Length: 170
Image 1: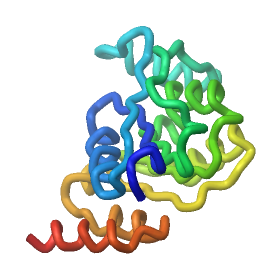
Image 2: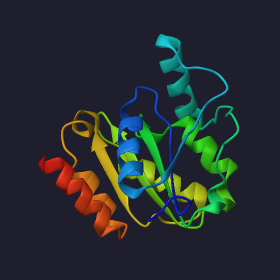
Image 3: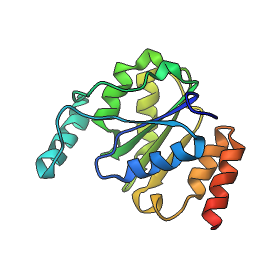
């Protein structure tokens, strides 16, 4: 796929989801969009705010997007798993652009479990099922590229998967 065909959108507080998003975008030759909040999440108060948003189903304020999802054939959306739920910033992004996604795929990073529930939440918000999903534990994001290759291949991009496999064997 070429640029303007695929958009990879993500939110990352710790940098783990960003690392995965950048790898996927590079392998698919996709545009990349970071979901940015209007306020920062720092320290223990940031963690508390994150958990409160999850428990109450609230969405934070976001800065304007630089890419329009409707300009792309496929949009991949990445989130960290927060207490077995989609992160507030991704929830807000999905809600803002709900009707603008042609086809979607989801990816998530987690410290423990909960990604299946996260993908269900994301599907419910959008009213559509993803074409593919990928979940990696935080420690595995930097350790192995094999699950990412499988995800890329499942999206029908064998050539991108082959490039990823070649880079992994180097």
